Amino acid sequence: MIRLLRRLWAARLGVRGGGLFGAFALVLALVAAAGAANNSVSGAKKDDGFQTAAPYAILIDAETGTVLYEKAADVPSPPSSLAKLMTAEVVFNEIKAGRLTLDQELMVSEDAWRRGGAPSHTSSMFAPIHSKTRVEDLLRGLIIQSGNDAAIALAEGIAGNERSFAQAMTKRARELGLTRSTFGNATGLPDPANLVTMRELAKLAQHINKTYPEFYPIYGEREFTWNKIRQLNRNPLLPLNIGADGMKTGFTAEGGYGLVGSALQNGLRLIVAINGLKTAKDRADEGKRLLDWGFSGFEARPLFADGQVIGDAKVFGGTQGSVPLVANGAVSVLIPKNTNDRISARIVYTGPVRAPVAEGQPIGKVRVMRGDNVTLEVPLKASEAVEVGNLPQRAVDVVTELVIGWIKSGFARI
Image (cartoon, rainbow, N blue to C red; front, top):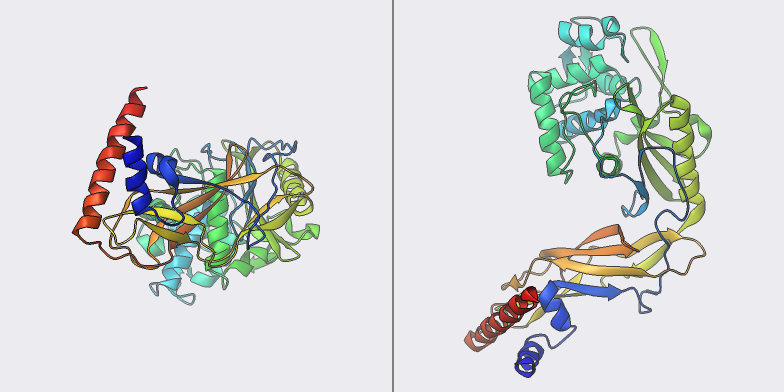
């Protein structure tokens, strides 16, 4: 039986096949070995002995999403005003879609004024009650001054009321691949529905930086004056001369002190997200420590060149038994300097992929590991088309799947 299986498998996976194990697991284990792209890479355990006082933390490379450090990064916690990153993203998206303009004026309702303005004694841009304010000014009040009145006015102007806007925030989060974070309001003020993870906040910050270059510079503006009241940007990293140019702070008694920071040094942008700290000083210190550690301790190493075949996915019912997979560009990863630990990678996809397969069709992803932790995931696509095979070719695939399915069941019983 094994000999028959090997002959059937060899007939369908003539080039770059994953072998018998690849069929069982539907993944292809790879090692970043020497090759055309200088694929010899080194890595280290994720923390390298570094520790932070932040209960929840993550540090990523903004270009690739490579995770340099994480601590309880998938544990939801109250975001406080860090939720305004999602508020701003929804507004940016509305503008990009043409449903809102920067010059459009929105009303500052009594509710927005009372719960988010001067009477609230919370962070505010101090927009007068019943005043009409341009979207561009509300955005600056939201981002620079962390104005709760600005957040509510934007929410009401876009969705009619803050609750509906909060539902739109959660829906938009899902569209961006943020599967665990939820939002109950536009301000981040205490609400049971306001829960985020540091991993997803970092991904959101990465998305804003890449998708909205016309709006991102607002996060680095040092001050904003509205209603004759001048307020400084609340981000403590901006004056520290470390390349920081964003993004948001937050505090509530429930959530503690939090920060999402972004900094650029020598062409490398890092994003840090931390939450649950006890003081504003701790927040500033730990944010800077994480960024300093990342900039000084890591370097970029190439894994795969642009257009290089990373592996294959099995094809069912096609003219060939597999299709080569490539990324959208070169794949590199940030790793600690002066270490010798090996980086490993694994192709993950749901398969076998049924023919026909179009060139450029998304197939799966390559998951790059440092030790037991996922440090990078990159989408993969088919590098060529595979047409539907003839009847004998499809018959071989049917028999192969039947045999493999029988052997899988046998393994499962062991």
